[in-house]
Image (cartoon, rainbow, N blue to C red; front, side):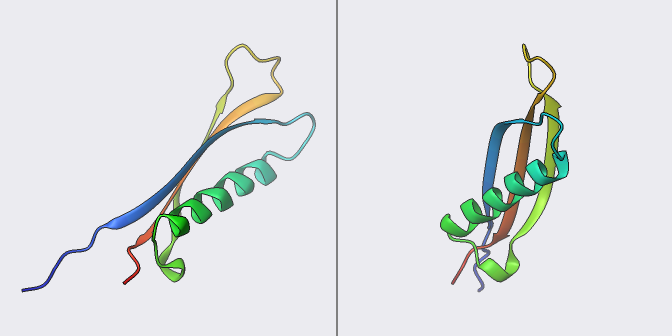
Length: 78
């Protein structure tokens, strides 16, 4: 009999101000933080991958703020 091991996830949801800045940099920052959170939750670092990065306009903002959500998953470290 073998045991099934699930995946460990790390997720981040942050508001970034992008006044003339590069949104790709903000998305990369959120993705890196999600990877770190997955590692801290017990995922094997070599198996972690970013599975989703979403960017949404922040409500009640002057147009320079965006909400970025990122999620990373990996196999549970043995």
